[in-house]
Image 1 (cartoon, one colour):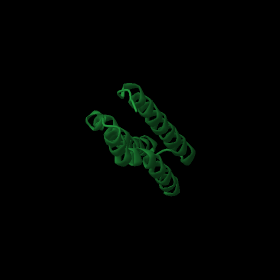
Image 2 (tube, rainbow, N blue to C red):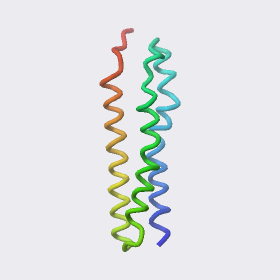
Image 3 (tube, rainbow, N blue to C red):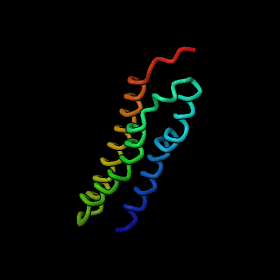
Image 4 (cartoon, rainbow, N blue to C red):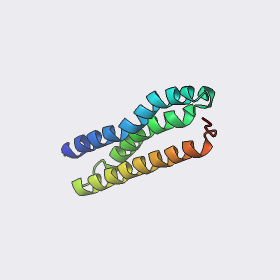
Length: 101
C-alpha cells in the first residue's frame, strides 16, 4: 500500500522544518551576538540529515510487511527523529558559549 509511505513522507517533511530553519537562522543569531565562529555546524547538519535517513531506514525495515506493521515502524522512526532533534537542540544549548549582553 503506497498511502502509508506517502503520509509518513509528509510527516517527515514536517520534521525537517525545524532543523532547516535552525540551519538558516542560527548562524545569523550567533553572528548578532558576536559569537559567529561558535556556530555548531556539524550538529546543525546532523539535525537536517537525520529525518531522511530515519525515513529510509523505516521504509527498508517495513518493506514486505503488513500495513499496520509498516505504519508502526515508520511511527517509531518518526518519534526517534523528533526525539533526536530535541536532544540535539538541548546539546547545542548546553555547549554554546555563554551569551553576555
